[in-house]
Amino acid sequence: MAAQFGRRLRRGATTTAVAAVAVAALAASQGPGALLASSGADTGGDQPAAGSTPSDDPAASGNSPYYTDLPPLVSPNKPGTSTNLPITGSGQSGIPASVLAAYKKAERSLADTDASCRLPWQLLAAIGKVESGQARGGRVDANGTTFSPILGPVLNGQGFAMIKDTDNGVYDGDSTHDRAVGPMQFIPSTWATWGQDGNGDGRKDPNNIYDAALAAGHYLCAGSRDLAVAADLDRAVLSYNHSNEYLRTVRSWFDYYRRGTHEIPDGSGVVPPPLGGGTDPSPNPGTSRSPSPSPTPPPSRKPDPEPAKPGGGSKSPVPRPKPTPPQTLGAVENAGTGKLTATAGDAFAERIKVRAKNSLGGPLAKVSVTFTIAGDTDARFEGGKTAVTLATGADGTVTAPVLQAGEKTGRFTVRAIATGRSLPAVPYTATVTARQADAIARTDDKALTAAPGAEFADNVAVKATYRGAVASGVAVTATMITDGGTPVENDKGPYFKDAGGNPVRTLTDLKTGADGTLTLPKIYADDTTGTYRLRLTTEGGATVVIELDVEAPAA
Image 1 (cartoon, rainbow, N blue to C red):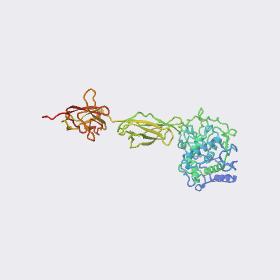
Image 2 (cartoon, rainbow, N blue to C red):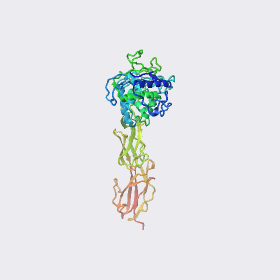
Image 3 (tube, rainbow, N blue to C red):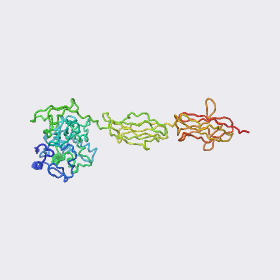
C-alpha cells in the first residue's frame, strides 16, 4: 500500500509537522527516499530550496494543491527493466498505457529538439502522478484527451494562491479567477505560453495527455537546464510548484519509476478525489461519492464538453479554445507573385511572395524561407545580395526584398525554399529587358558636309528619350543606308573606321549616356560626291535619319 497523508497540501498551509510526517512515513515504509540536491535542502514548510526558482516567480501549476500519495513499498520490476513494460501489477503503482505512451513520446521529442536537457520520461510520470493521479487513472479517449476536464480549485486566495482570470474562462470555465487545468495542471496563463500539440491533431489542449506532457517537458527544459544534473532537476520541479514538500514527493515517484514500473490498461488506474476542492464531473465507478453527469465526449465528437462551473454546482457551457493549426510544415508555394520583368538597371515592380502551409493546408507562421538568385545575371536583392533568408508572418506568407535588375539582359531564376528542409523549391522566372527609347533626335541642326576623301568637321550628336524622359544606357545602331523604299547598308559614300582603321558603315554596341545623349565617332568621306543618309535606331524602335553631303569645295 502507498503511504498516504492528507491527500492534498495547500500552498501556505503546509507545516513543518506535516513535512515531518511525510518523511517519517516514507522512512517507515522503506520506500524510496527523496533524492534532494544539496542546493535544495529542506528549509521547513513550503519555502523553496536554496538556489531554486524564487517563490515569487510564476509556477506552471500556480502552486495549486497536489496529491501526496507515496510510492508502494516495492518496485514491480528490477532496475533497468522499465521498457517493454508488461500489463500487470496494481493500478496504484502502474501507469495507464496512453499516459505512459505520452510521457515517452515527449521524451523522444525533447531528445530531438533539446537534447542537452536530457529529459527523462520518468520525471513527467512523477509530476503527472502528483498533479492528477496519471490523468485520473488514465481515463482518456483514443486521442489522449480526458473524458472530462480535470480542474484544480479556484485560485481566489482563499487557502490557495490568488490568480485572477487570464483566459476569460476558455480553458478553466472561470472568468473571474484561474484554475489549474488538465493532467499536468497548467494554469491558463502558463499554458498560453508553453502549450504544445503533442498528438498532431492541430490543437493545443491542456486536457490532452500528449499535449500536456510535451508542454511540461518544454517547461521543465526551459533555459539551459540539464535534468541529468540533480540541482537542475530540483530547480525544474520547484519551478512547477514552489514547495520543498512537492519536490520530495515528486522525487520519490521519480526514483520509483526509474527503478521500474509497469503498464496498465487505460482507465484501470486508481482515481483520486477531486483536486483540492476542484471539480471532476465523472468519478470512478464504484466509489462512494454521489453520481455525477456522464463523461463529456472527447473534443472530436459533438457536442463539445461542458466543464462544471468553478466551485461545483450546475454545469454551463463555456467556449472551447479555438483550434491551433498544426506546426508541421506541409509545403511552400507561390503566393500570387505576378510577372517578373524589369528594364536593365531598374527595380522590378513585382516582388516575390511565398506562402508556407501546415499539414492541413492552413497558413504556418515563423517558417524560415531562403530566396536565392540563380543563373547568368547581375540582378541583385537590395544591398547587393544574391540570397536572403526571412520568416513567414502570421498569415503564412513572406515577401522577398526588392529585386534590382543589372545591365545584363535576359532571363534568370529566383528560388524560394524552406530553409533546412527537403521540400521542393519554388522557382520564379525573371526577365531583364534592354533599356528603351521611343524618340531620338539630333542635338543641333548644323549641316554635315565634307570634301571627297576628307573627314566631316562636325561629329553627329543625338539624344534619346522615353515617354519624354531621358533614356540613358539605351542601345543604338548607326548604319549608312541606301536610298529607296527598302534601305540597306550602303557600300559607298561616308564611313566610320574600326580599330584597325578599316572602313565600316555600321556601328553597334553604342549606348546613350546618363543624359541620354550619344556622340558618334568621326565620319569620313570617300571620293564619291553626293548626298548620303545615316540612320540611327534605338532599342525600342525609335529612328532618326541624318543627311551627309560630300561635295567638292567651291572654286
